[in-house]
Structures are given as structure tokens and as C-alpha cells.
Picture (tube, one colour):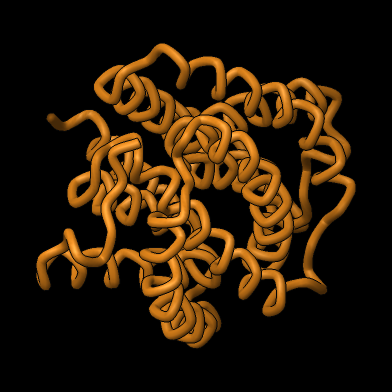
Length: 258
């Protein structure tokens, strides 16, 4: 694998990766989906395929901080409904990575993210929840929707660590409020990202050199998480939803750009 170490990076490149790591911490505790910007930065500074393996431990560090912050707000019935479909998506994503080049991966994920954002905005214009609770639980189509989003989430998180926006669109469409949204997504991504480690290692995307770079970058995740925790209480629900959707659109467009 053509990984990079600290000694291969210029000062500006390391600064860009450090900022991306800080943004990971912020996204995990404030605006989920914003880490698609981090994904784009990692892919720009590092070899595109290798960047997914290097970013994964940074994401897991952010997931741990998010779980510690919002562990009381997770909605486990939703998580159990998602996991089987996500497992299918992860396996499909692994097979996809065996033959797909970087250009195909980036374009595929970008199209999926923009489609998900469009569907979510359309759905939210059609109806709003009366009580602010997850309407997915009582919906007859809840299981179908969970399976569809679960497969897409597993696929996108495996091939490009870009599952955040897909799952954000699912949780928004299900009517989750801020804290339930953040608590549920925190446990979801901690479990899914940890389960991806053997797949990524098997593909050669994680090795000793990549973990050394991760050790230097994880330090910057912590202040980002604290900034996010401070900011989320100051963001109202409507603005929160708009920021999540905007981050998804920006991430999708970045992946489609050459």
C-alpha cells in the first residue's frame, strides 16, 4: 500500500490533516455529516485509497468521544433494525473496493449523497412530525426504509468513510431531534467503524505507518469534540437540520469534483 508517514508530509499538509481531524471531532458531537469535508481533505493530501484507512481510526476516536457525550440519548430499536442491512452494505463495499478505482468510488458516493439529500428535503416538505418523536418506529414502511438506508450506509462507509451523511438523512427523515440524533448516530458509527477494521486491514488500507500518523492526528479530535459539544446547545433544531443537509450536499459535490 502506498501509505504516507509523518516524514513524507510537509508542514502545510500536516496542518490540513490536523484541521480535518478537529473537524471530525466537531462533526461527531455537533453536526453529523460535516466530516465529509474531512474525507475530502484526507483524499486530497494522501493517496485516495490509503486515505480511507488512515481516516478510519481518527473517526473511531471521534465516535468514542460522541458515545461518552450522548450515550443516554441513543435509540436502540432503530440501531438493531439497521445493523443487518449495514452488514450487507459493508460486505458489498468491500467487494466493490477490490476492483473499483478511486474515480469510480468518488463519483458513486457523491451521486448517492446528493440523491439522499434531495429525497430527505422532499420528504420533509411533505410532512412534519407532530410530536417530534421518531416517526419511523410506527411507520409501515419503516423496515423497508431502514434496510435501504442501512445497505447504502454500510456501502458508503466501507468504500469512502462517507456513511455519515447517508445515516444523517435516515435519522432526519425518521424525525429524530438533536440529542436523539447524535446519541443514536454515535453508537451506530462506533460499532460499524470498529467492525470495519479487519476489512480495511485485509485490504491493506491500515498498517503500522498509517497508525503512526493516526496517533499524531487523534490529538486534534479531542478539542474538536469539545467545540462541538459547546456549539450544539446553541443551535436550534431547524438550523441543526439545515446544517446537516448542507454538509451532506457539500460533501457530495466535493466527491464529484475532479
